[in-house]
Every structure is written in structure tokens, then in C-alpha cells.
Amino acid sequence: MGMQTIEELFEHELGDIYSAEHALLQALDQMARESSDMDIRRAFSQHRKDTQSQIRRLEKIFRMLGRKPDVSTCAGIEGLLKEKKLFMRERPTPELVEFYNVGAGQKVERYEIAAYENLIEMADQLGMADAVELLEETLQEEDGALNRLRVLASEFEVTEDVDEHVDRAEEDSSPRP
Image 1: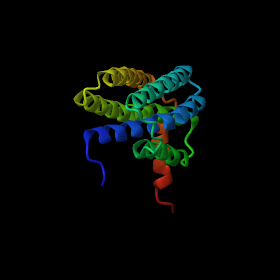
Image 2: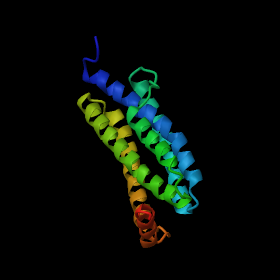
Image 3: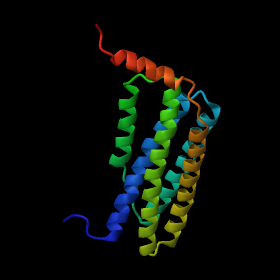
Image 4: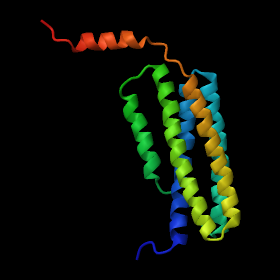
């Protein structure tokens, strides 16, 4: 018969972000390992710890609903993880991987922020004050993670000379006699 109620939508979206958070645990661990910059490494490691707490909060909400967490696949996060795999096929320098990861982290945070804002709205409409409180706590952590990544991105310095890179690209594309 399909999805008919806001309660069913709430459970569906809760399962979706639950799946996303699980997928991100592994990705955050990998991004921390890929970084030689200690500030970036710390940011990803801290967010991994936050993600573990966020998963526990989601499990608590599932218990409030009398449900077991739904471990489906979050297509949104899977798409972002696939983007990373495609990027890595380009064999980027370690420095570019770090820069990419900071940007990819911002994309993920924005996705999660939107998901949590939506869940908060639904939980509020359903009169689930305890769930709203738990979801708002997670939303604050996601906002904090996004802000940390913004700062890291603004401080990131690419050491390769961009003009030199452009000159090489022009040489490579110029017609050969």
C-alpha cells in the first residue's frame, strides 16, 4: 500500500540518516588516515566520535518508537562516497586528497544538517519533544563540524604553483608540429 502517514515518513527518514551515519563512520576514519595535517586529522577523528554518539541518539529514538533501527542504504551518502572513489581514480596528490576531503566533508555536513532539520520538523509535528531534543543536539554537532571544516578550508594552502600548473597544461594541449 505504500507510505501513508507522517509517522511512516519519519521512521523512513530516521532509517535513512541512521544508515548514513553508519556509512560515514568508515569514511571519516579513512579521511583521517589520509591526512598528514594534524588539524584536519583531528577534525575527522572528532567527528567520528560525534557520529558514534549520534548513532546512539538515533537508536534511542527508534526505541521510543518501539522499533529496531532500519539499516537500509542511504542513497544520498552513497552518492557522495561514490564521488570520492571516482576522484581517487584520478590519482590526486596527497595534498589534493586532503583539500578534497575537507570539501567533501562540508558536502556531507550540509546533507546531514538538512536531514536533521527535516527530522526535527517532523518530530515536532508528531509531538515527540524528547526526539526533538535529541535531534537538536545532533544538529548542533553537525553545525559545529561544518564550521570547523569551513575554517580548515579557509586556512588550507595549496603549495603547488598554480601558474606553473596552468603553463604545463597549456604546453600539454598545444598542437605539436
